Image (spheres, rainbow, N blue to C red):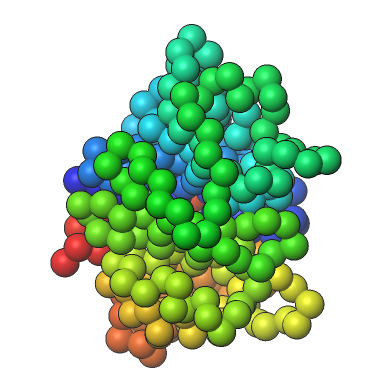
Length: 257
């Protein structure tokens, strides 16, 4: 049975800097294939500290949505760990072009010898990793950023990563059985390229997944008690909505009912 494990749920500079929530990524297992999304600060340590511990040497791939520090700081060490401490070339890295090239790439050239394959995320292309089809959804977030759709025998899983809300965004996640949304702010702000809670509700209402998960919280969301906010959304929409917590594991039976 597949699952998601939220190694960390921090989503804004203050929450990350103070480690009010851990800032590690999300470990994914679907149809027997293990992936890691957005290895932020502390990811390798969290892999070893959770119970049962997670073995990066079993990862088939690492997915990097964008190069901001809270999503990418552990990408190089996780590439080495995926390569069994650098002893084998193995695994796949999917990342935006500006995380790999240009003036300020975050994936070191030194670490690029570890994965067996590196591919640049672009809209419209389908990437295959050990039976999982991965599609990139372009987002608006200051740097090149992509949400992700993962299709496998365990349904369609969508990750609405950091983004400014746009009217077409809900349609891009049509058909998701599980929808994970990065919700940094409780209230809308015009000059912030992150989803607010009302915008997340609009997306969930339109997509109507079997299970929606809120994560990547900023201070206003933490003060609002995200588990209570998620329960209110569930009651309002008649859908199962939960707030992620550090270490939360969700098995695929939750979204394949």
